[in-house]
Image (cartoon, rainbow, N blue to C red; front, side):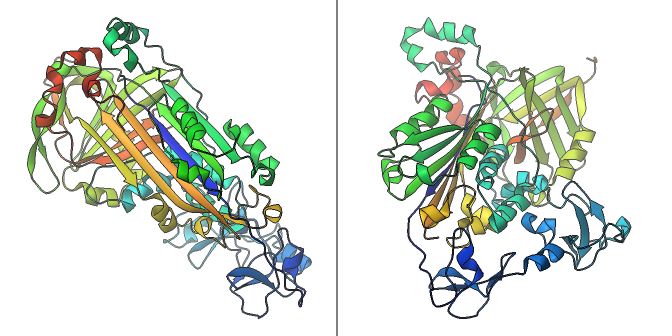
Length: 553
């Protein structure tokens, strides 16, 4: 097998139809909304939006009074509300971007009201409070890429794909409205995702070699080099509730396949996922989950990469070398080695506090990924707590091409990891989407016709990665279950780049810097477990340990 493989991501939406009873004894603004909501019996306000005052009675939202005066709303509203920021009390502008004019009050960004005239007072940027960073208030990609790494920073091997999660959230956001939209937008920002097209594999030499060994011909896996696919599975009985515009948006912006299915079993969706991930991801969903009558839709994103290093490591140079774990314990790790090499496909930085190494993967149809390793001299856990895009940008500036001879040692690793995605997203500010009552996906489903609401009830993220002499193989599965309710040549001495302590890594697009995968390695593969693999004659066929357990996940 070759390297860098698969990432799957999905969203499952479940609904439970029910009806909102109307309070016929009172008249209020919420009765005229779509979907409509009953009037409150009492006057306890728990939430106010552009429509008016809201309460909660009998575990349901209800309206209080006749709502906001449209003329007053016109004067007092501002563009930033839908983005999740309050309107400014004053008209002092400190920043203007494509969304509008921004001010800062109470050390927070706010939007300038529509009622402010064009002659608003411009506040000098240097007067913005130090606590407020002057940048696009709705761009938050920096926090997004490393947010989960910081939350689950528990001295364990970690892996996830920011790009794939971002695709899923973007698709989810397309169907969200009001504060549900704003919370997602505050986290992922307005940046349009880079569009990647499928790149087919052309490794005929390897396939021919394997085919000559008929005993193993069944092990051929025709992976694409790169593949991104999106799909919207809809239960046939639920299709009529899905808004046509939402379906068209997923088709046009994400090239999504729309599949109407009976949901009698998980066979069809599992087969779709398996096909899109070249057979690597299998049996993701159980029949019990899919056949549950409460399930209405599955929003699925698959991301697949299968790429080799430009300069590969020789298996003859792989050996057992010391690796010092976070607690100081010395172990013997299976370590890849490359000696006396000079190549523009490697770059490095040897700082006082960190050692950095980048290695290029092969370029296919103008797309090239690179693997970046960052090893702090002291403690990885503490380093991750403060990691930011600015630090990565500075590392990029410090990187030096390996025009001098370098000696590389880096441990081989393979592991899987389950991200606690639901808890992480809630901690990061996406709350309403998981709330049975507050979730607003009214651009996705006709809630009035449905007679209820849909919300994300759970979010799972399972990943697997294998770093080898040939390249990197990675796979991940993310499932968000939503329930409905009513509601990387000089002749001089080699420079040693030895990765022998816990490190973090980034797999990113070399040009756009989009981060496909990121994670940490605290415990690499042990040499005592791998030594026999290198004595296996079938390793020459690039089958490695998969001869004994092909495509394990």
